Length: 287
Ligand code: BMX
Ligand code: ZN
Image 1 (cartoon, rainbow, N blue to C red):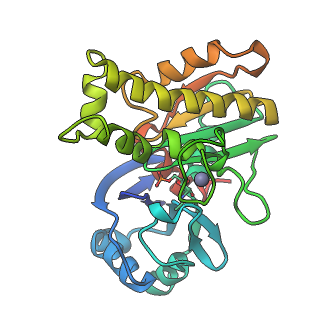
Image 2 (cartoon, helix red, strand yellow):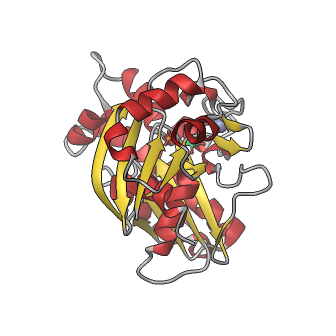
């Protein structure tokens, strides 16, 4: 059975044709700014209309808070459409296929949980990407909470004097550690500005580049120790474009070893690699 998987991020949309838990075909497009869900859904369909006839169902993972009304923003700075955005409802009308939708990091958490090498009961997934997202598994179940907010751990404030976050708080993990935060800090140092890809490439030889990345990794290490203290997690899985970039996971784990032993938690790389959220979109149909 084929599933159309759609992963909507702050920067890009990934599309996958998924069969037996494997991505058979994959496409990618920039996330367009859209005025309404019809326009956005039609844009997605244009990029995969040749797949539609053969798919039995559609799984969506998306940045933002997912509720019955649609998708809304915790950090409006990273969302390209008006809220609440009824994307699942509109795609359902346009395609007449069964549709499931979840927050991107919650979906990835469920996929990663089902693919752990060593079974665990309590796990978190953290994506360090445009934003910092998360999904939490408690006693083998995805915990999304009454309103779907659970797992928005990028918006735990870890520095009351830290940068302003788009969510309205100060010093959220996302405002310090995300790809957007790294880019902002880096543009104050490098003139002309360099991309985050370039920043990671030069980090081994360039002390300033290295310390920008280290600052982000330290914030993620703090987040991991806080989650260990709150939930006594067995393991944390790290994903996202920044989370999986060269040496980032190593930096997070090194920083965790400097913290008191009781708050340490093993952090491993996502099995789904950069496609953990896309695979998570499809895995909503796997009970
Ligand atoms: C933000 C929040 C989360 C999301 C996370 C990662 C919005 C629009 N999104 O914290 O819902 O999971 O970013 O998103 O408030 P990504 O775009 O970096 O994958
Ligand atoms: Zn925030």
